Image (cartoon, rainbow, N blue to C red):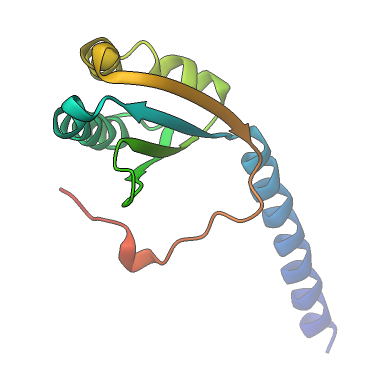
Length: 135
């Protein structure tokens, strides 16, 4: 009986530590939304450049946790990018990578406006089967 209570206490303690650690890691994350307006004449070229950049960044940078981009169906020149970085440091490293600089410099003439919004997560959930497994 004592062993059972000890195991239950250890389990509860482990859960508390895990949850504290998970929350601490989440607090260090840099999460933001980029609202971008693209000149309509560059829309297809911009979408291609952004998709290429996001794919490479997530694939090669451990600190880039998510880069998800969508556009408004009624106004396709309005693009929204949801960004999650492991930390501010990971974000700063990202800004200096060759693939980011290629994207940024290559799309300067395509972007009419850019608004970066710092946000704090409430819930960041995704079904595991929706995560691409690229090898």
